[in-house]
Amino acid sequence: MNSSHYMTNLGEAARQASKTIASADTQTKDKALVAIADELVAKQSDILDANAKDIKEAQKKGLADALIDRLTLTSETVENMAKGIVQISELPDPVGEISDMRPRPSGIKVGKMRVPIGVIGMIYESRPNVTADAAGLCLKSGNAVILRGGSESFNSNQIIGQCISTALKTTNLPQGIVQVVKTTDRDAVGQLVTLKDYVDVIIPRGGKGLVERVAKESLIPVIKHLDGVCHVYVDKDADLQKALSIADNAKTQRYGTCNTMETLLIHESIAPTFLPEIGKILSEKNIEIRADDASRIHLLNALNAEESDWYEEYLAPILAIKTVSGLDEAIQHISKYGSQHTDAIVTENESAASRFIREVDSSSVMINASTRFADGFEYGLGAEIGISTNKLHARGPVGLDGLTNLKWVVFGNGEIRT
Image 1: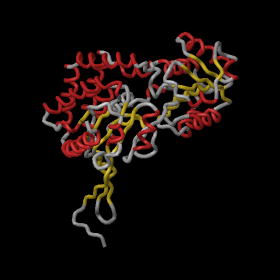
Image 2: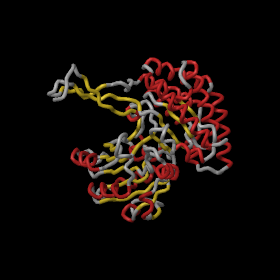
Image 3: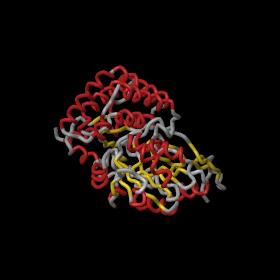
Image 4: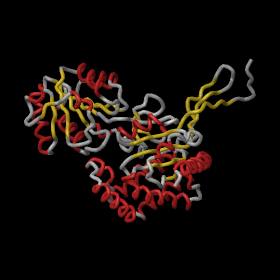
């Protein structure tokens, strides 16, 4: 297969199909989404069989446990994929929504309308559920999408792609609206990110190496985040029971996700009380702790934290812990070592909470909640196509609104400019 020719053909088909889906009404799009969900449920056993092949190959290749965790599908996760698609169908359609209408002295009325971006190129690793989530979000927001999953999830992605194609066909929509790349050739990524005549936005979702490569090579705008170095800061005025629960959940609910806490910051005045308690919880769950000198005196079996640990996205049962003098040092630490993904404060002090959410420059900033909530589903977006730490366009979990743009619309009644 000539990857250049193949990817160009996908781009041409996507551009043509994007015109159809951009003008489709909400009822048509929702009907297609429900059909996709039904097809996923009907083909659940085929999806799990394909996924089992991927897992077996991943284990043979010695992939990290975090990657295998992301790769693994179960009956429950397939059902949740289908439910997520149905939930997207139930969300308000942003396309065509007009806002900020205001009259001008000339007599015209000026506003903004939400419109599809056009064609999305999605490049991702491991998680096969991204295939369904991305397809659903792009379809509902009136975009076509080209999906290039990782080689480790090739079999899973192909069967999910077949389910989507079947649903599109049964609802009389072009199959070019959602296309799953049918090659594991790495050159396909290089070709996709240069299809500037056909693709409007590239969204990479995966490890730092993938995202860096895409950002470097792409001739197309990229929506991305590189790392998920997420922090929880336990303030001197924290409710310690809340803090224990939040810190435990933020680290141990799942290890291999980008919104998992990687560094825990503790105010020095509560360190003697809080650290032994959280240390016991983490020890019982076999979490390796790497701590600074001030924290290690209150922890059993903690390793010495190196400078590199403060930058690390472990995606594993490892946690860095640091004792800080107060809110100022916590904010400074997050600013220096964080990745502008998700950071949380635990405090009952409204002034401290207000400063934290104002001064921490991350795509999600939380008060008294686990960082694991930084997720499109939890934010009410139905699902997410990814999380963005960009400063322009979309930021944070990217759902339907993040896959649309705005254009100015003007309503007049014969006015002319003088």
